[in-house]
Length: 278
Ligand code: AMP
Ligand code: ZN
Ligand code: FE
Ligand code: FE
Image 1 (cartoon, rainbow, N blue to C red):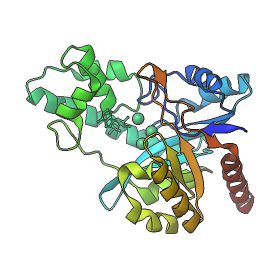
Image 2 (cartoon, protein in one colour):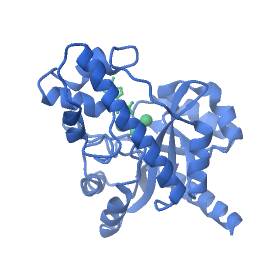
Image 3 (cartoon, rainbow, N blue to C red):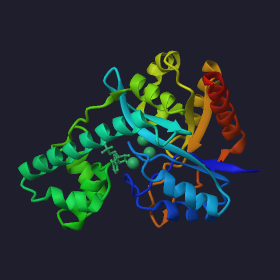
Image 4 (spheres, rainbow, N blue to C red):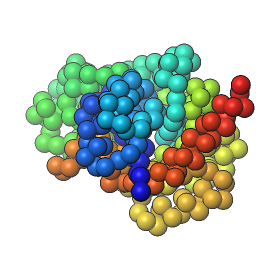
């Protein structure tokens, strides 16, 4: 049996592995195929593709776009993207600018709480175009302002806390169109986390291709629930660990194992769509 992990992050967003380290860890986990899905970027995909090719592993270029529908945040995964697509790169650059502005705003609010964090400290830790809250948390830990990342989220960064800043987000429909015009498939990420089941029919009408049934934070019952939803709406099935690096000494990569037959179905749909265009 061959397996894939289709939800992975690197240091190009809020993960800690380089693309090369990610591929090495994927090899250790015995995976035949991986997809890189960094938040609002495709920057690590070329490096990951090269590293994967060197060890004979299949690689799918992807991203995880932060989007919204009816004021609910949801994450749209894009797979099989043309990472040189001009519109994709132009729009992603805008999302990254929003993320960078948001770091300044979060730091201001943290400062207003009497905590002397510098924005430069966050950008130095992030060292990427797509910074986010985990980088703010890590910078606070490094500066000795709090003791761990969880504390940063609990006290400052999670929704409703003093430094929580809502992000201006692309609509889910626009995110899916962006993925499609770049030759990709649009998949709803970890629906069990966002509790957004009521919007699934609207997304399906707008061209949603698949749904992430298997995820680290989905129980078996949750996975089964989304498998039946996938069946009902004729959606492709995906899954991944959402690994961000080492957590508690071990990386999550490969702990969610998607049977390869699902990758074959994804590839068939991409091929079918490409054939319809030409
Ligand atoms: P952002 O995209 O900047 O809003 O940051 C979202 C990321 O922060 C997610 O992808 C998670 O990796 C991480 N995150 C969200 N909530 C928490 C939390 N309570 N504790 C630790 N990390 C979190
Ligand atoms: Zn993340
Ligand atoms: Fe996500
Ligand atoms: Fe993710």
